[in-house]
Length: 176
Image (cartoon, rainbow, N blue to C red; front, side, top):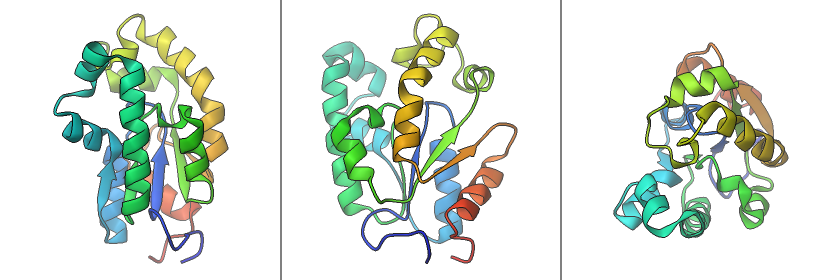
């Protein structure tokens, strides 16, 4: 397959919370006949509690360490479609680890983000003033998403299946 390295995941999805990494990732895995893995799910399974509880009980630095470990393990072990948590790219080691992998940045605008994430969802980083906070997070993270990504695909006004199709196109995995 063109656009794919022999080691590591077939596709890595990055982007902000609520962009649809899990839903699109599952659709992609099905299309590629492979498995799907989400590092946020790995963290919840390892910690035995939801991410919002980790933030409250142990704080963001502890969560970020769990996230670093989860990403390292998943990149080393998983050969299917991998979705990373929205803040995973904040870690320099994680960004280095993604070098050369088929990473796609799924993006959306703030109005769509607020609609998708909801104002009362258990998202600890959006607890106060979600619109402003989401904009701030994106200003900080967008350059990091684009740094690690081989391609950028918008999820605006697209079904998960259409986004998955666009990812396959951009990574030239169409005939997979």
